[in-house]
Amino acid sequence: MCGSKQQNRCEFRSSAMGQSNAARDKLYDLRECPMANSDASDKDIAGAIMLRGDFTNTKFKAATMSKVYADEAKFDGADFTNAVMDRGSYRKLNPCEICFPVESAKWPFVHSTLEARGSGLS
Picture 1: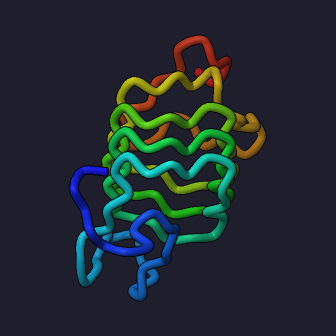
Picture 2: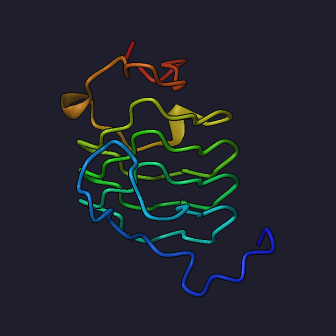
């Protein structure tokens, strides 16, 4: 996985800052992590590098995901209910495969690369 030797690298950990400014003491590296069916609910994972990670069926309920870099990551079946997902990069994401209840959606995301193609949220 990208040559990283950090033990327990592929775990959701909240920032000690508790803010969405992505301030951390070191890089939050989740690149290529196999984290399908995990739970990141209520976590502050702002600033994470999630490139090509597998987050299939992962719960991101009320998670803070500001400023994440998640290009080519898999989010099939993920639940983003009440998540903060601003100023992030989620290219190659198919919003039609995400569980995103319309009643909790605040669309459009500000500065997000997500698009409403075919999702019924536009």
